[in-house]
Amino acid sequence: MKKLVIFFAILFIATIISCNKQSKLDVLQLKEVTDENVLKSIEKSGIMGIPFPSGSVAYKISESETMLVLPKGYHYLRSEFVNSNSFNSNLLANSADTVKVTCTCTTGSGCNPTLVDKKYLCTMSEGCSVCERKVTNTNNQSIEVSGVFDVNRGITFISTSKEKLEDNTSLVSDLLGNANEWLFKEPIVKNALEQFYKKIYGEQLPIFLLKNEPAPEGYQYVGVSIFGNEAALPIPKELVSENFTLASSTQCKCEDTTPSGCQRKTAGLGSVIYCEAGTCKSCSLLNITSRE
Image (cartoon, rainbow, N blue to C red; front, top):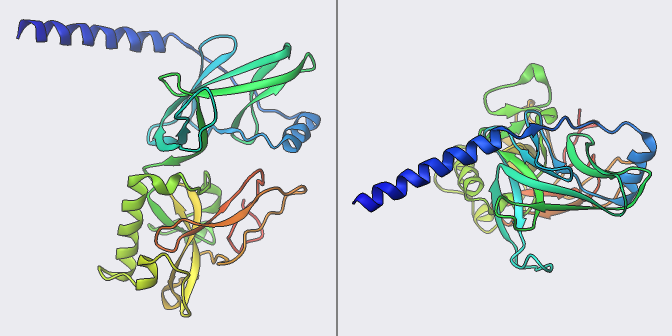
């Protein structure tokens, strides 16, 4: 018993030391990129930034390493490489609110962390010709960040206007991004989607939903926010409110100058569909002229 008490005492002290060490890290004031040449270079390269929504904090660990911490309730969708030394297609979906990012210039000098459209990027200065980014979890395992979600938001219909907001609706401007395959692997998302459908259909769900088949006649796809991410799902046409934003059941649209990606995907869960954005910033299923 005495040994057990000593063990927990040591663990408690170690936790305090760890927390104090983190609190001493300097907050890194990330600069938003405005240089048109740099922005065009990023767009052309197809580099995907790491989501950095409002309320996120960047801590400077060293000159090249930064720790990104999301606001309370937010989580990164991430895919951990099983073998960190080489790419492995067998990825495990999970989430966390903290990642570490290292920006390294392998040829020259000047590979710096910056922000572009609420996304964290490593960008090159004139003295650097090769800038590499490495993302790791708190255990220093290499990972990919595929998006971000907010557990506090649940699932809501996307409203057509701010004036028509209701308890079960949200705005397009509130979206954090597009849904992706990793989002639908999260148990909390699967459970929320099931409960959302039961509110619409009752305990007995239609067969096409259970089989993840396209919606038959008499149904309309409408835009939804799934923990902050755009997707669309079918509901009976008689239940479609003028407040809901309609969605295409067949096509994703990209209005970028140089579109890339933006493909329609099925979630394999309750006939939900979404757009895999790729590098397209305006990729959407929603029948609206603007995402603002």
